[in-house]
Image 1 (cartoon, rainbow, N blue to C red):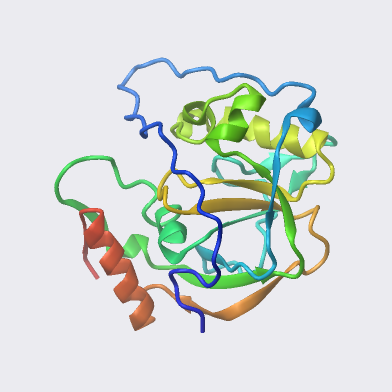
Image 2 (image 1 turned 180 degrees about the vertical axis):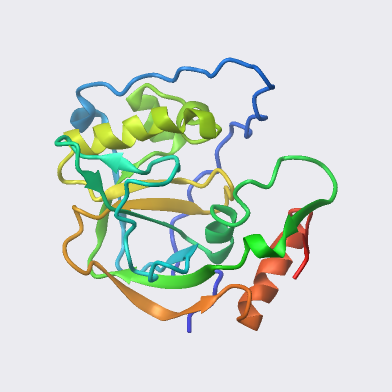
Length: 244
């Protein structure tokens, strides 16, 4: 089984220079981010996710590790989304490392606050940890800070916004999907773990059965080594897991 810290070497990506913003104050008006331009196909930069690079996932146990979420339910930054005909686009999220996958899922809503924070163990239950590989190299739109400059939107507007802006950030995913038929998903430096890359794949662009398991999926609470890694990461971010 591959180590959870990653299995393949990569060219390091620069960490974002913009700090994560604080949550908006109660009653504050939601911001409006730029709307996607109509010539995205000429503006995007793509990056290749090699088929040998493991995609780490922590996901609800109602899905298999390689199974796409068909939509239309949910409320994530780049899903659920619709194609140009109004049909739900299946999506799947992942990260470059175990830590990234955990920070983008079960630890996603841990506040940026000093000192000890608590998280109920019940919120960890019902989640599996999976490692998957793509059957072929993936062509993804680069949403790093440098690439975003050419798109006319800042990292703080697209990657580092809070949930109230997600309906607007999803419009960017829909516009990229509609205008760039050759791309298979998006890739960016994780907001939750800026040491790693995060990805979302478009299920209608990657062919049938595009992913395969690299290691058996395990329950993040009942699998002792995985739960130990969860607790190690929780300690690092100042979280105490409480309850049974």
